[in-house]
View 1: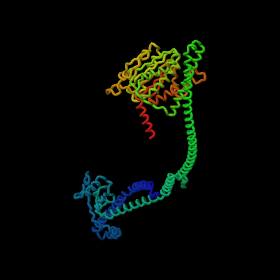
View 2 (view 1 turned 30 degrees about the vertical axis):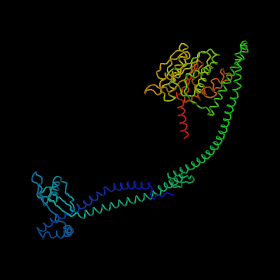
View 3 (view 1 turned 180 degrees about the vertical axis):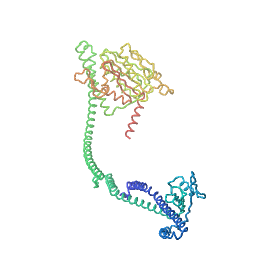
Length: 609
C-alpha cells in the first residue's frame, strides 16, 4: 500500500518556525526604538505648540496693556499687530493660561517663588530657579499636557522693566492643554508601525518558504522518495536533481553509491553461486570421503581380526620354541626364536592399535561401567607388561593409596590406558625406573580442577624419580593434605572392603573432604619430551623420531588412543616432562564415570536441540 504523501515535511515546518522567529526578533529589535520614540516626538511637538501659545498669550497681554494706556498713540501699533493677533486667535480656545509674575530679587538674595502653586508648578519653578538656562518644563498627565514657560529678563526687556536684572525671571506662564489628539496620534503611529512590522514578517516568511520549498525541500523529498524505493529493493531508480549546488553533488554521490551497490550485489550474487557450486562439490566429496572412510574402517576391522588369529598361533609356537630345552641349548636358535617372538608381539600391538582406532572412529566403543577396585586395575595392567620387563633391567614399582575408593568405570578401558602408558614408558626407558602411582583427588568440581590438583602429584613423583632410588620411599601428596605414603615396592592389594573403609565417604558429614576423582600417574626416567612437543605427541601417527632409522618402533597411536579413551571416560590426560629428565603421564578419571557419561549425553542432546 502506497504511503500517504505529507503536504508539509518536518524540515519545512522547522525551517518556517526558525526563520519566522528570527525575522520576528529582528523586526522587533529594529522597531523597538521607533516604537518608543514616536511618543517622544509627538509630545515634543505638543510642547512646541504650548510654547507658542505661551509666547502668544504674553504678547497679547502686553499689547492689551499698551493699548489700554494710550489709545491714540497705540493706534499704529494696533494696526500693525492686527494680522499677528488674528493668527493667535484660534489658540485662545484652550483653557485660560495662568500668568505668574515674579518679583525682582532683593539685594544679595535669590528670587522668591510665589505662593499657591500646584505640585507641577512648584517643581517647574524650582527647576527654573536652580538652572538659569532652563526656560520650559512639560509633563503629560492623562489626557492633558501640563506646560510651564519661563520668561527671563533680557537686554530689550530691561528698558521697560528697569527693576529686573539680566537673567531673572519676570513671568512664568502655565498652560493646561488637552492631549487627546496627541494620544490618538501616538496610538495611530504605533499601530501603523506594528502593522508594517507584521507585514514585513509575513512577506519575509512567505518569500523564504517559497524559496526554501523549491530549492531545498523538493530535492530532499525527491532524495527521500528514491531512498524509500531503494529500501524496497529497486536498485534501478536514480535521483534527478539539477540545482547546481551541494544538493546536486549529493544527488550525484547517491547515484554513484547506487551504481556501486548494484555492482556489489551482482558480484555477491556471482560469488554466492560460485560458493554454492563449491559447497555442492564439497558435499559430494565429503560423502565420498565418508564412504571411503567407512570402507577403510571396515577393512581395518576385518583385516585386524584376520591377522590376529594366525599371529596368535605364531606367537604361541614362538613361545614354545623359546621354552624348548633343545632350542635353549643353541644360542643362535634361541636368538632367532626370541626375535620372532618380539617381532610378533610388536606386530600384534600394532594390529590392536589399528583395531582400537577403527572402533573409535566408527563410534562403536561403548562404556560399560561397573564398580571396580583401582588396585585390581593396576595389578592387571602391570601383569600385562611383565613379559616386556623380563627383557630389561628396569626397576618397576606400583602403588595404590589406601584412600582411593572403589570406582564406577569401565575397567577394561582403564587397563588399556594404563597398559599403553606403562608399555611406552618401558619401551623408551633404557635404564632406571618406571613407577605407577594411584592417588585420590578431593573436592574437585570438574575434570579441569582435578587435573590442576593432579599436577602436584606429577611434579612430586617426577622429583622423586630424578633423585634416584633413595627417594623412592618419599611420601607423595594427594588431594588436599593427605598423609598417605608411597612404597618403593608394589603395594599390597587392597580388598574392596578395605579400600572403601579407608577412602573418605562420598556422602559423609558436611564439610568433610570428598574423593571426586582418581589420578593414575606413570613416571619413567627415560629421555624425556621437549615442552614444545607435549601437545603433538597426542596426535595420531605421531612420534618424536619420524625418520626411517628411528630407534623406537611403533604406529604412533598409543597416546592418541589413551587420549580418546580418557575423554570417553570423562577424564583428562596430561604430561609433565623435560628433555633429559624423564616423563610423568597423569590420567585423572572421575570416581563415577557413569555420571560423566550422562552429562555428556545431556549436553549432546541439548546441542542437537
